[in-house]
Image (cartoon, rainbow, N blue to C red; front, side):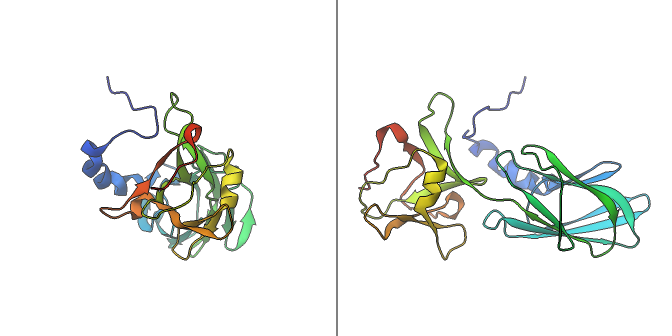
Amino acid sequence: MKIYYRDPWPCCAGTYIQAVADYPNLIYYKDASSLYVNLFVPSEVTWNRPDGEVILVQETGYPESETTALTLDLKKSASFALKFRVPGWAKGVTVKINGGEVKTEAKPGNWATLERTWNAGDKVDLRIPLPFHMQPVDSQHPERVAVVHGPVAMVMEGSWQETGFTLPKTDTEFEKLLIADAEPGWFGVRAPGGGTNHSRFRPFYSEGELAAYYMYFDKASLPVVMW
């Protein structure tokens, strides 16, 4: 019997290549009456419906940006549901259609539904706020955490000699320590005595080879002394 790993940090090196090859098949889904947007990546899909095809183009910088734009192209008006995945951690998701804000239930961990008659050129703008939170590596080690920005695991650069760095007790306090960097998705850290530390938090996927970094922090054993 196949059982999926229940904790968020499993080792998946053995299936990595297979998983990446599968990503294009996971961006969009469909059923008889709905088109589903599952992943927020620059992409295009053609949905062949009995009464004509629908082309959807997605433009986004997510997860370095909080927004994604969906533009529809169809030869004649059509009524159907456009559904998008609301990440389980996402709160305060907002939607605009052709520039006007619309209300829809965007419950974390569920599909939000936009059902209407669609016309060629209709544009849907989604905003998915990207909060910072400290996520335990598993239930057995609640005080050992990784820093996550929206869906992205962040690492703190470790090649500088810094003063002790302490994670605060709450996610809200942690966000107050961060200063957006010129590089999208990177953040500086306010130093205890003022100014900023040399080390920054950056997406794990942006790290190159031979880079020193910190991914996990033991909150019960802080401060972390850099070198």
